[in-house]
Image (tube, rainbow, N blue to C red; front, side, top):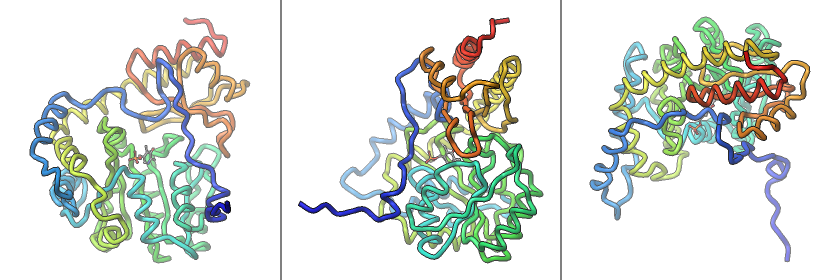
Length: 366
Ligand SMILES: *Cc1c(COP(=O)(O)O)cnc(C)c1O
């Protein structure tokens, strides 16, 4: 029997790898360590009774998008309406929709590496060419090199992740403005991935405007403590949203997700309090790491990138797993040789991580 072959480029691809090992302390995927409020879960259970199960969901997710426009519109000078919001199954589906609508054969997406691997992966899956621009040694963006690359390659999409996964770096307003101007000159779209946006003091949402080619993507997976939900969205000009609506599958967003997404937004102060607690915990984690023989990079998110000094990163990762602590192994990733990324967990999880790492690195507890 003959077997069909997948597309040549797909056959050469590697899938998305994030091993889920059964351990006590899971600090590898930047999830929130705390569940969402019980009142949210209770309200959702009640709301489920109101779903017309025999009917398709609201295809345009209009109520959810209107609520998101209200909440996120606080950060946008002119405010937002539902027509400025596109929602999908996780921000990964938002990114995929962007690549489907704007990418494709003969077009290019540009990324600043190292960054979130899914940007280039999703671009490739949609047949979009990829241009990777190296960051500086300290993971900052060399603006001259960035602008030059945009002008040379004329990417239709330029991805900017801020706070950047996995380095933690937050870009300032001046940097984003310079990139936006460069992107505008080549008729491109700037996609700012703010999966960790609530951890940062400034949001690129401030630049969202009907006449500006910039969109900002966000997710319920991290700060909203709802990775199980699979809900993400972007805010941007109405003309971008209109194109995305054409490429996404009809009824892609089920009724439960739409309702849960709205109800979660009723708990904004709780989310902000969780973010504050995580920032305080991150600072404790950073202080703990500073006492160990590791190099670490400043983070504006819920994770910290570090590199054990003089030790093989992959070995350290395995020895942490042996102690029932799972972090993200970036040791073999290009430009991240020997690096590991730890998600900020609960106080107890962070303590367990630091104790295990101290042991692995042969440091006696102080
Ligand atoms: C976690 C993460 C996402 C989230 O993807 P979802 O599909 O919404 O879970 C998007 N971008 C970055 C940079 C991330 O780290």
